[in-house]
Image (cartoon, rainbow, N blue to C red; front, side, top):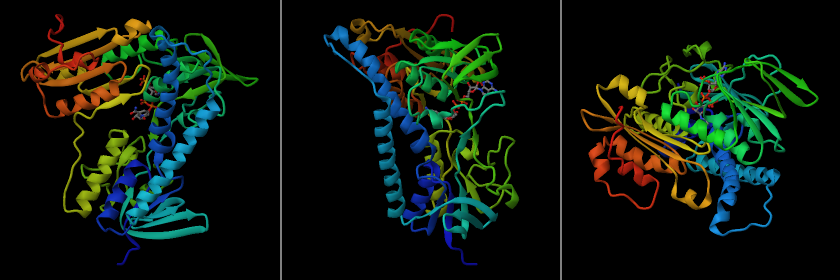
Length: 455
Ligand code: NDP
């Protein structure tokens, strides 16, 4: 049977674009369907706009820090609409680049919402009406979407999508959740002068991260002015003349102009017709795939957040590329999910790779912990009270560094470099043999000689 395309991808986000572009560059007849603009969560409503907002907010701290270095800035004023305008212009530019990358790889872009009709046919609701497209192989890369909890009154509520595009800065905001998105937005809004209250059901933010990291970040956030309500949930929200009255399980009531819900994301897999054609989904809607990203239907594959493996942009890209190499370049590639570094662009930021102390203690017989908490050099003059935390987790038997964690300025940049060493299986002795770059914060990672006595 002749198909319109060899590969048809549904969803032009990081994973879908990476797979389809690479397939196109291998000479595969490929197309990609997208109902929104090209770029997906990362480019349009995630990592990129978020990081631009993080940069914007950092200037506030930099201006404050500059005084003791001799600077006096007579008047500083922040204008949110200017930031929004310039951020949107940058997203438009990235959108154009993504489109060019696809056309340069001879990939057809089909605009409209896609739905599987049978394992080889997709119906796309295009602006000019429904269009059926057939393909030998179909790839689902539809990403995820913010979840909203069933709390009375919790509507209207912002999700990260709207928070990145607010027409004006609120005076007070309540952020629900203690994960990546919640702490990142808490940092952005707090530094820009918004009164931020973060409500978390756990005792500390960032469940799943190393306990020292969780504690340290939380105390730094509180020190910077974020009001943290921990071990509570939201019972009810009353919307009174434009303001939200948020009732908490401990009886407290907080008033806010905006409410941001950052309680996780769910795979974007409903109404795609996946189960109708035999694709199996997990209970949370994630597409079940094997180690080759193949679904329960032999010619349908899935990559990225819609599979809920490790929901990070570089992982989706790697999954997409591995798939294209496997299917179209005679180069079978499986993903390796070990030692994937992660960063949280909170303020201060977090960088981490490898095992937490708790995970390491479960897997290894004897674990040594090296930890350093210090005041960064810059703070000695600026007077900024922030402290940096660094931690190494070492398997005593092999001597290997199996976990590396940091909270402090440039943590993401530093951990990206350290991740190479951890991925290569570097030992603590090799860390110690590495000459320090002085004066830096990262030199602490190669100069922590004494393990904690209690570890
Ligand atoms: P996360 O999974 O990181 O965090 C969800 C938060 O919501 C947790 O604090 C969780 O609490 C809380 N929560 C969930 N359900 C409830 C409930 N019923 N009541 C109260 N609290 C609840 O999700 P995010 O939305 O922050 O981010 C989604 C994903 O996006 C991340 O997992 C990550 O994969 C990706 N991302 C990555 C970024 C990066 O790489 N820098 C940045 C932003 C997003 P608890 O801790 O108690 O479970």
